[in-house]
Image (cartoon, rainbow, N blue to C red; front, side, top):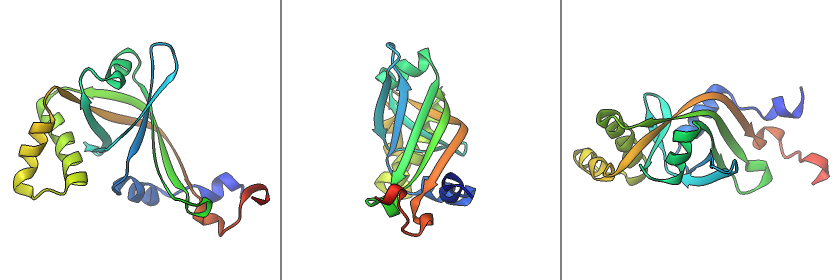
Length: 156
């Protein structure tokens, strides 16, 4: 088994990492062809990772021009604890109010921990001048260095 196969995460491990409360790094392609990279809190829409952002943000402008997106969720402070999931796909801009509300409620619930009776009100306040972005994942790349049992590459 090669090193890449050794550190690959199972579908259950990937889901567990994505379901955790982390920050997602999001890369879109700028007008000049360079990556535009930002960190965002995220939730889920229809089972897929999603986030909400200002409708006039650079990432939305980029996605309207070119829907390709790459996202990264990672954890770990030392080599032997590094874990991550890269999601490669397209960003679907969500302007429908009901779908945007679902995404916004997911984000608010995950990061703000409000009581259920305040969740929708907070999500609706967050939706002003904003859109959602649903990440339609086409490819997943994952790694979990704890599977190496302390072994490091090249004697590091």
